Image (tube, rainbow, N blue to C red):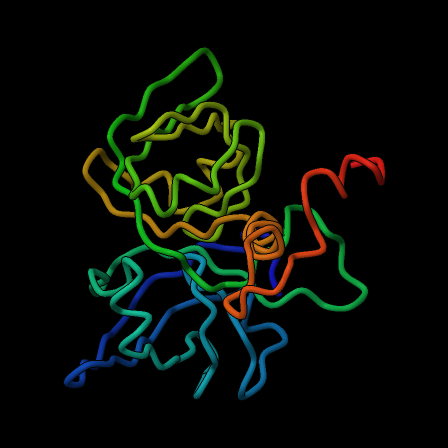
Length: 214
C-alpha cells in the first residue's frame, strides 16, 4: 500500500519491450537507500516489483494489463516518473489509501496559474469520473491530490508550488496522459450497496445506513 506522497522523481533509463510486456530500468537515489529484491515501488502510481537493482537504478517488469491501463506504455528513455516505496507499518499516513492499481488514464486539458496555485484539469472516462467527488481524494501519477472541481467530462485539482516542483508534474503539458486511481473506499461502498448477483436481499440499504447514523 502507498499513500500518494512522492519520495523522489526518477528517470527512465531504458525500456526492453517484449511482445506484450516490458522491463523498465529507472534511475533513482532515495528509493534505493533501502531496497530489496521483490520490493514494491509505485512508478507514476503503478505498483511495480523490483526484479534487479544496482547503485543508481532498479528494474521492474511491466505486464500486458499494466501497459493497457496506464501511461507507462508511452514511457521512453528520459521520461521523468514519480517514485514512492510501499508504506512501512510505522510510517506516517500523509496522503490517502493508494493501492498502486491504476483504474485508467486522463488527458490534461488545461494548466493554469492562480496566484501561487497551479490548476490542472483532466478529461477522463465516465467509468472513472463516477467515483470522483468534490473535495475527495484521487491519485494522479501516484500523487495524492484533492479534487477541487468535477463535472460530467473533466475534473480539476489545485496544486501548491511545492507539489509541482517536487514531482514530475513540472514536466507535464496540455495533451499529456496521466495515470488515475480512484479512492478505493468509494468502490467498496458501491459494491456493498449493489444487489448481489445471486439476487439475495442486500442487508445494506439507504434506510439501514440512515437508521444507524450514517
